[in-house]
Image (cartoon, rainbow, N blue to C red):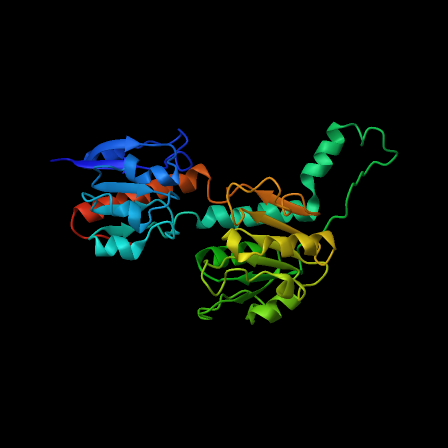
Length: 319
């Protein structure tokens, strides 16, 4: 009997520019663009194979799926799945640990360069005729900052953190990093390890690349923001929950730090009254650092390879 495969939330991974066709080699395929949290068990009814990105799969939902044998998380984070409940039920859970390294590191610098150069602000001013009415041949709306010689502190020195460091080195920035495992130091001139607090004190740019854990949740808060330079920028392309958003908003509003850019928030989509969205000198982007077509193609391919390995009896990337 062919497997019944259900994709619970396929739209963000594949809004139409990729193909689910490869999944059909493993059974019948039903793809839902989105699935409400309380509808997961209903949509997955009768499924033997389930693919999901962010749809919550708690123990009570899994208990309603007696035929389920496999959950493929289409992503790296798997906190949406009650892994222990799945294990007790005999369900294998996998994730895709590597796919977006280049895209996320690239996005760090898209955010940082916007903070440094205010490209959009200046382009819009030109469109509005402000340069045409200016008496000066070089027209500026805000101070500009050069990255060469600045210190970037990278919190979490895994794959994405290290790729970010490589780009920073190419910009002639000085790299310092903190991580639970301070090994395999890169060969950049002046690179050094530092404690989290020392990194915050010394960095002109702090870039977060830590996984979400009880230890890292809320690591950026009023106390740690107070350690940063008033001229410093904070970049977060990791989990929104690493940051206490009201504390960051307060720091920006009062000028305690110079600016911030975050790709995602603690609750997504955010509430309309989220103060960080409208805070001074803050860029908030809608969790898109990972979402280049190239990265999404690698992600989908990784999920399919995980499924193929499971069907062959040699599951990989099991969490």
